[in-house]
Amino acid sequence: MTGQQTFDELESLMFEQRKITEKMEKIVRELTRHNTEVTKIEMQVPRNDVPEMITLKQASEKTGISYYALRGLCLENKITYIKSGNKYLVNFGSLVDFLNRGDAND
Image (cartoon, rainbow, N blue to C red; front, top):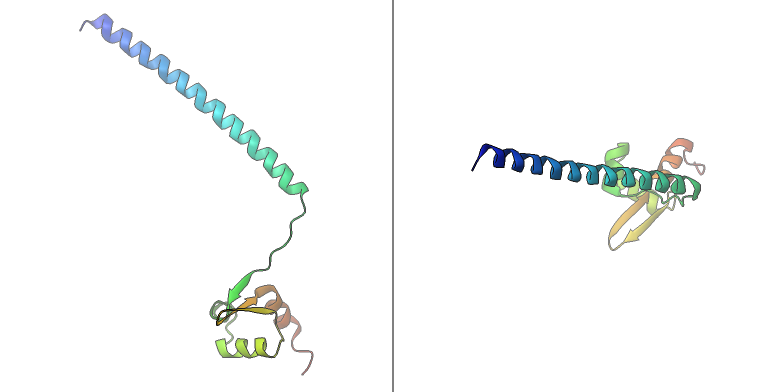
């Protein structure tokens, strides 16, 4: 292999690398444009707020209220919950509202 062959190979590799870099830059520009368009669409479409449903154990950890006290609030229908199998899933927003306003029936 001569010095000229090595130089020609290096030059060819650099040319290929430039082509790959240009393709990558084009893809990044397209993805950036696409993400910007998606963000604009998301901002225009009203969101249906899905409530955060958490287990009684998670609610207990977040609030410091015992598991059994929270279960009692569910059984008394004082906070919004659903039962999935034998688990209670509490609407955390409803629980926070209840804790902020207190029990109106006291």
